[in-house]
Amino acid sequence: MNRRSLLLLATLGLPACLPPRPAAAQALDLSSGGPVEVTARGGFEWRDAEHVVIAEGDARAVRGEVTITADRLLAYYRQKPDATPAAARSAPAGGVLGGSTGGNEIFRLEAQGHVRIYTKTDEAVGDNAVYDIDQAVMVMTGKALKLTTPQQVMTARDSLEYWAQKRMAVGRGNAVVVTADGRRLAADVLVAYLAAPDASAPKPPPGQPEGTGKLYRIEAFGN
Image (cartoon, rainbow, N blue to C red; front, side):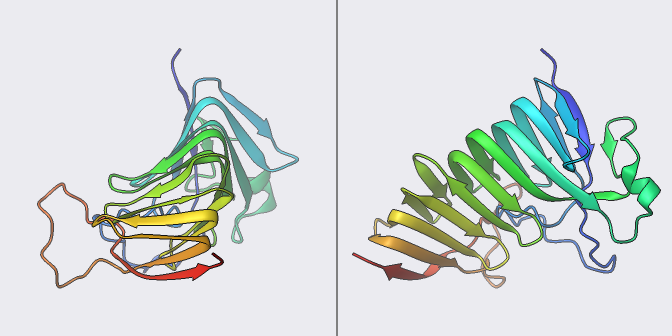
């Protein structure tokens, strides 16, 4: 069955003069970039009263270098501050929510079932996830929670949080971090801080992304 697609605008009213982020950045950050393209084999359900679009069946959301896949995706939207009420209420034309003259923006994504969010270097997996685009924060729950980067792997029993702008990951419940060189730390709760890629370090070959940066600090709480 062919995928059905829907282009969802997710701009957040940021100043137009902001410079684009370097293409090499591979953090799990959905807070900036172009529109979010959502595809699903099962199609879409539009709940205008609830301001949500639901993608069913092998659903996928892509923005820039970041992809989310799940059995089901819910994209919550709101009226843009500079939009007229008529523009915000208008139904999508040609599979576009918002667009250059549209009145809506996405502020939250919920993924349900076999969730995977990834870039070329980093990956988080779990059963369910909520991504707050305003805050660039993801909270993942379910079984076998895992966050993998080139430098370390974090696992947890209860939840995994990923704070893209703060470059911080939080594992709750039997949390474990294992670094690429074999160091291991376990606790009830772990808070891991990732350094930004070193601008003075040699750049990787063309086509090889830098990743999210090395782990430089961990706070551990309980056991």
